Every structure is written in C-alpha cells, then in structure tokens.
Image (cartoon, rainbow, N blue to C red; front, side, top):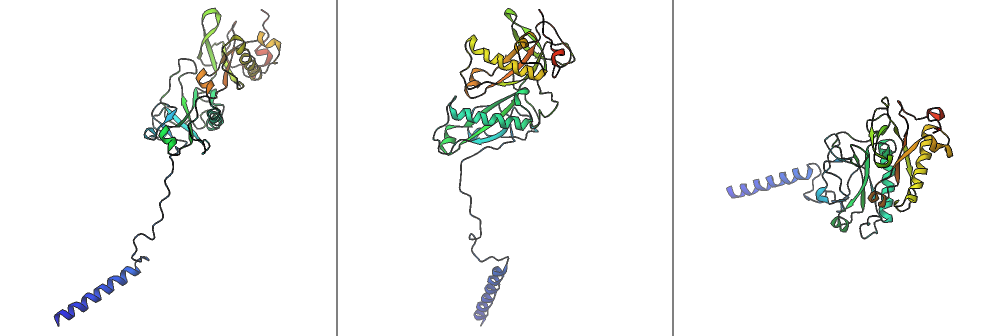
Length: 298
C-alpha cells in the first residue's frame, strides 16, 4: 500500500514539473533551437575615428591593433578606412598604382576630417595595410592615419596629443601654418622656416598647396622649375596679385615637397611659402594685393 502511494505521488510531481516547464516563457524543452545562429567568421577590419598610442607603422598585424579613445594620450589617429579589391591576392608594393590610389582616397578623406587641406597644418598623412598573415586571412583594408608634428620642416617629431583631429583645421587653429621667419644656409638659400606670430616681424608666410602631376621625384634643377612655377601661382592667388612675369620681382618663393619616399606612394602636395628676401613685415599678406606686395625695383 505504501509503495503504491509513493508511486502515485511521484507521478503527480513529475506531471506538475513537466506542465510547469511547458508553460514557462514558451520553453519547449529544447535548449538550443531558439538561439540565433552565430555569424560566419570573417577577416578583421580596423575602425575609423579611433586613436593609437604607438607610432605609425605601414604594416599592422592584428596583435598590434590596440586602439584607444582619442581623449587619451596618443600619437596616431585613424581618419578613414578603405578597401583594396577583394580579388587581389598579394599586398600592393610601395609605389604601385594600388597604393597610390589608396593614398589619393586617404588624401581627400583626411582633408574632409580636419575641415581643410590637411597640409595647411602641422600634420602628416600615411597609409597602413594588413600584415602578410592578415592578408592571407582575407583582410583587404587600408588605414588612413594622421599624426601631429612639431614642425613640417626636416627636424619634425611626432607629438603625443590628446583630443581628436576631427575639424581641427576648421577655422583658427594652433595647428595651422602661417607666418614664418627664415633661417638661411649657404648661398643665401632658405634652410629652415620657423613659425612666428604674424604680429611680429617676419619674412615668409605659408600660402597654400600646389599639387604636382604624377611625374618622377625631382632630381635635376630643371625638374624643380614646375614646382616653383606652381607655387608662384598659389602665392599670387593668396596675396591677390597678378600671376605674371612681374611676380618674381614681388616675392621669392620657398617650396617644400614631400620626401622621395612619400612621393613614391602618391603624395604630390607641395607646401608653398612666399619669401621676402629684402624686407620684413608685420601682419599677414593674405589678400594684401599689389600695395602689400609691390614690384621691387632693385
């Protein structure tokens, strides 16, 4: 009798438990059939708008990808991420058409990001690509990275900064190039440009950027002529004077092209400066016109 009652009690408890499970939130006893399917694994792609504590490298393995918020100290900021064709099987070589195309895309995106031509500031743009293993795993991205520099002259050092470069050149900015004081070298040539406040006496000023055509890096005196001619036209527009034969008697010009390595990967932006070899001024000559930049008679 006792054994029969125990058996019936067990049956009742089992029935209650089963009925409770069937009605609890729609569970049907199958523990996996309601889970969403996991996404298929794919190649890694970095994100734009993030910063990096380490110095720029042109090849980035996955193990080195450690982005930080741009409010934290950093030395590199990714402003855009593009993609090479998926069908490409090997990384593009330095100087290749593909890498120059990537730089051209980065060039435009970087200027959009900072709010003006990025070369108008103490900035350097470079393109990073995946490592060999990343490429073999299917990564086809290229990363457009900006860094702040102490100067755009030869002695430039990377600045550890806080805060994003987004809109950094939209308006007045301490990053923006402006009035300069030259330091001479042998033969009276300009060796160095030192930034100064325009209210102080100075003999040079950044006037803009001339974009060189896709030609080899200048190596002979004749190769430099188009750069000076191009920068003189930029100077004329900046000051508001005629771009004619008299322009060379109004002002000298200092050209600062990218180095041979940057030229090879597609950087064709030449920084242009006016240079008053015979006098100094106070204030900017932007829009000064012929009165501000008269023809020198001697």
